[in-house]
Image 1: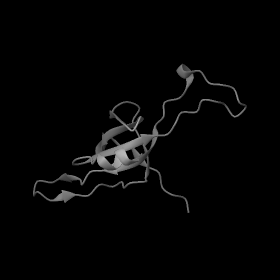
Image 2: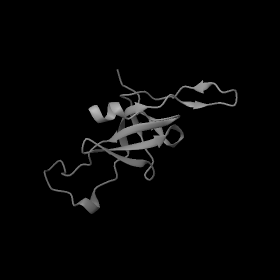
Image 3: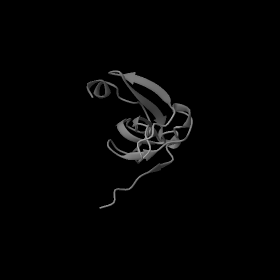
Image 4: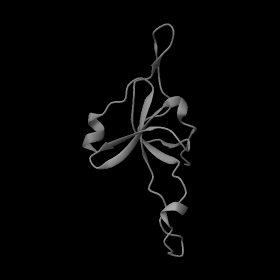
Length: 102
């Protein structure tokens, strides 16, 4: 994760790593790439400081590193770090945050 530590998102941007798609069914059958469902879940790897309001104050983000979030089907900017793919989204593009069930 050293490459991720070097990349600091600006303003209200969030760097996420998408979960790997399911490539096998529970019965062990391989799923063709075209039939695999889009991965909409991701883990937050880095967050920016937040956007500024009209008074110039920084508005804190509602997600933090380690949170599991739900992404839109399309969007985000792909970033390759240490041979892994990450995506940058604006906070407003994140659809939801999964709550920890404790």
